[in-house]
Image (cartoon, rainbow, N blue to C red):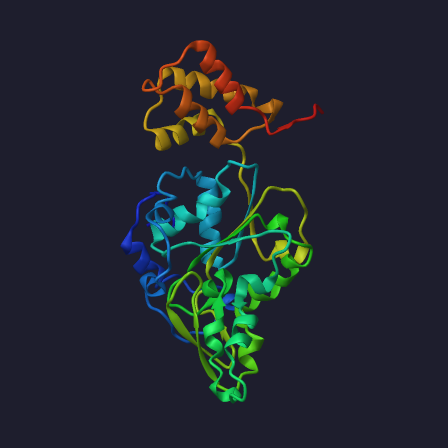
Length: 332
């Protein structure tokens, strides 16, 4: 019997969802509280499209990357993926969530202005102030109407199975965010000061991208199952050692010719001789500069479909345009 939980099938497997409820016990230092919460992904009622749910259906995952995924699942550790644009870093979490029936992926897109609180919760202070009536008692203040859990906070809310969270482009963050994530990754706990100070001990707030409400007691909660977290990085910066030690690290290499053929087969359904020749040219020209697999797919779709007849000259010009390098690679 295989030790693997994620097996790269790209198809939802309800039996694996049952297996998730019986995961081997985590290391003692990664065990969290069992406080009870929603019992299935459907209980979150997130506002997502079918396109989001199907995003990982054609993902090509290498055996080595699958091993890193399974290590993260067993050890309850975040998976930090580094690689060039177009290597599939962001799509992996959708493929894992799809196969293991983890429900919709919670995506936290990072910018230079992102703060830790953005991921944990959103608080509409102005909306709350505008609704307060003069002379109203604090006890009647429905603060929960103005609090929504962020993607990280929603992922950490106690459930009987792990959620899937994508923290996208972590290297765009300010210097403090990776260090701020340390305590959350280690403790699995969320504290909301606006609720901690409120006189009502139990407050109902909304999940991220959902009208579903859940109750938070004394302004804090701890995860029951640590979520499956994928952080992506383009390798544009270094991270603190303590942050890296708390992650499973994996660098996704640029796909070789054989993997490119598999990707094209999965996405476009066929690999003709002309497609195969363009793949070989793309692979041979790649050392000249940064190019993404998405560019290859765009060029094949647009220029090599018989439904769009064009002259050889037009086809070649379009391919040069679509496969233009993002950045030149300096010779060593």
